[in-house]
Length: 489
Length: 100
Image (cartoon, rainbow over all chains, first blue to last red; front, top):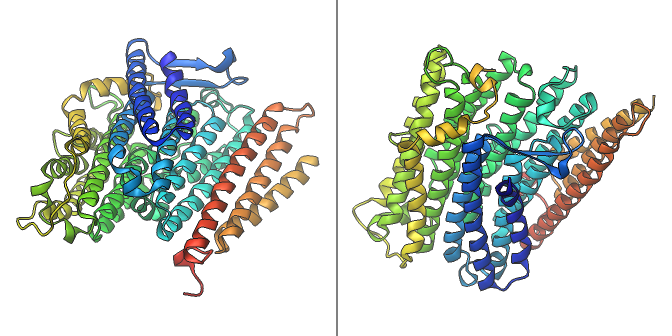
């Protein structure tokens, strides 16, 4: 329980503290709090592993009067993944977000915003109250928008404003759904909503909340803000935005559809969510294929990879009778969220190193860079293996679980999509790799410290390890998972 | 009766706000439209809380929190709009510019 409190409060306190410190102390404090946060996330995962879900009712008031925080296996896994990504980003930002490299404004602004974003993420992971979740994703969006605008160029500001318009519209839609749901049931607690007496306004409320969260998750057709915003931010910020931020709103969708209102999941609604996901996989992949800049390729790949997450809606429960394990597709989608988070953060950090070394991220300027930056190029390749879903990576485990479920449920079109999406990923990731590993070296790279180069490599290795040692995270995700995860919607 | 009046007013505000968010390219107008939509929602929320005769305190607490959240969002948005206007001289997004 202590770990749960620390995970939520530590980042927020640290965000306030770094505001008043000079630069050197600021970075030290941020790194210290990130280290402490990783430790707290590990302890939380251990507590969940040993004793099941950790519940905390604030002030001792049980819902509906009070607000409950609860860490189940999924929340613990996401908290741990986020803490690891945060640690890597902080280590990379120590080199990248220096005053003489990015200017005093960005070097100052990055640290409190990063910690604020982290606190908001953790709060969303463990909240069980719809309005608490609203405050959480709003804080998350504001921190994310400010991170996009950090460089202060007109291009970055326009990207941040476009993101903000989508994020605000999404918040309003979500809030409208929350208001309708409260007006009908008089509670905001997800557990109590699961036991509610159905009302007429439920479908509208869930529809509004879902639409708002889809805009924040950047699912097709709401993805238009994502590539420009993620490419405009400094690389450590892009890593956070791409790897972690969409997972928070996706988690709320999972909580709503699988825990609060599973009875409303009608086949047309599920099919629509899955179709949007399918179009996102294809369209994001095609757009990634035609980009000329490394960061834009990685950003469009996020659009595509987020589409896979929505395969959970038609496939959950598909394998229940046919397989010795249950909840295969649900676990597969959550595995995908974890492995994509690690791999995508590694890719953006590697892209940041390339930009720092060459001064550009045009593919033509990166040719032959693997000779001078072998560790970074290797990290990029390892992360690409995860995104393509090749064994033995975490991405492979995710796709394997989703694919076996789709065959067991007789829904083979989704399996075709998973295979096709993997081929597209191989195609669009081949171009940057071909450039990096080209024979002729066109540019001379500035020297990059080895510690900085090791950071994305460690993250990419973790995303592979997630597949090699998949048994432990698999079991962790099963702890206190919602019932419809095994039975299907 | 009361709820109907409040709900209709709230719905009208939300409608105006959504129209503004979608149709007006001027960014400052969009920030105002966002606030209008939020106000409409809060109005409906407050009315829904008072519907049973006794006052439900939870909507009030939530509305105040929501207003604070909307205020900070507006502050950030206005700050970004001003920064964009200073650096590019325009108050519309580049691809929505009516006079290129």
